[in-house]
Image (cartoon, rainbow, N blue to C red):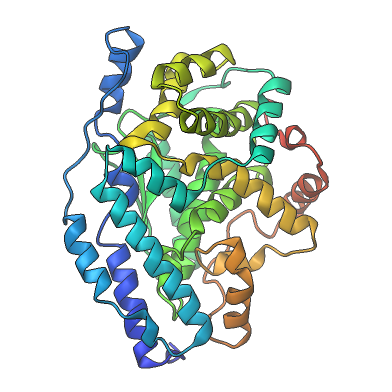
Length: 389
């Protein structure tokens, strides 16, 4: 292994921030542990305004904030690295403030600061999708948690065969819902049910994007590229949806789901209640259970605006490609599109290594054809592919 090109003080501060990032589980900590039980009660008409239960913190946010405030990022010597680490320090502070305000009105205000709200152009695009794309049911067989875990492990084995040092895993977790990535783990809720025509797309989204960039970032001299630089979520989610397009499986229902998330975030910020948001999705053709899950994701912990970033991130990535940009640099680690020039500077100077692995779909003729078509598309509804199209 080549010696780390960063100054010792830069390495130390990077290590402190990356270790602090992994000492708490932001998404898990703001996600209900009783969502399925509450959903059943809500759909049965027993609950009108759902209240959720959350897991206990492993370490209290106040303790972690004290540690964070002891890290002096002004000491970083490399100017580019310093800019990236200062932004990461601010983001961690916001996340920990959100955890301290979990399930209070302040949580939503902090979420807007961290993830943004819904710009008029994004809302217009989402409304156009729901108005012009007919609702269809997921088709084909469904995979339960065990079957999806087996499929995920096959994909993980593919990457381990390419590079034995790849340290990524998948497991069914009773305290998780749906399918999500946390650090180097793919977590699958025991009640998870994945439509057959969505399974590979979900694998490429979670494993081929989130875990691949975690692997590459964790092998960089700058460790926070593995845990994620400030604002990485939007670009990561956009890149992950682009992977669904690349493998030819962005379906009608999936595109409507992304649009529904944007619209629900906008309605929540406009003062609509949980039930009003749910009724709006059902009226737009969403299944009652699926509509509940979408609204739960957005109302959790007091109001989370993160789900608007999937469609926004996708449109921004497509805009980047439309302007002549390349994709390869995005697999150096987890970072925001706005930080791409800084990442390219570090890579050009030899501070960053080439990716350890690339997604299975990356270098393929069919992939290139699909992405070229997506880049040429001037309307989000033209992105639909797959069996449900």
